[in-house]
Length: 266
Image 1: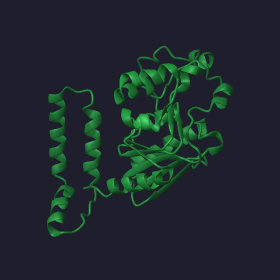
Image 2: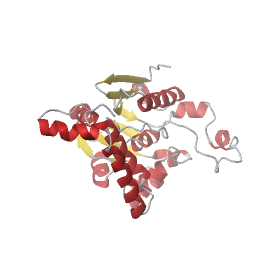
Image 3: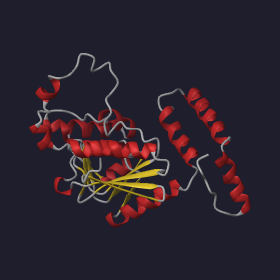
Image 4: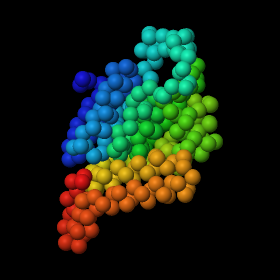
């Protein structure tokens, strides 16, 4: 169902998903979380979408969980822990906005403050671009709980462990330039350049052969925990499969003929 909390625009193979609760710094309430899941599933299932951008409206990317809603629905230790099923720690994780695999490149255009669940949404994207002066933080520890959207797992695998532990255990934020040096984001640009930069990157990726793009992305995640020999074998096997596609023939042919390739995802 369409929701005013999330604006979705699709053009030229690029979907732009804009969190739209500016008066609440785009805090994640249930409606926005559900809208994000629906939008991510659309990105995954719609062949017309090749790349997606996630950003926020207003002065924040996303401030994390809506604390007012959390308080009113009893999502503190009592409200949550009392309902934990016995097989909670052995059963697969439930589907959330942090766990939907779009199977296509996701770019986080971090336009403003990025805290808690907002940072975990950004970490769930493949590429992160930040505006100058943006702050990133995981303040949950200061509110009696800790990040539940993958932050404690993903962050230490992405940036130096000491920096990740500092953020997790003190709840103190870091600035965009520190995030860049740490490897959390790949680019920092002015606020005015953020959207054009993200769109240019998305359109460039969308112009490439979609099967090759998807395979390259898949190799990174699939081989992350594998020993190097197994990882290389898997990558080589997938490379061979992609080499048999029509798009793999179109690329060299277009180059030889001096024209732009027309990739069809076949």
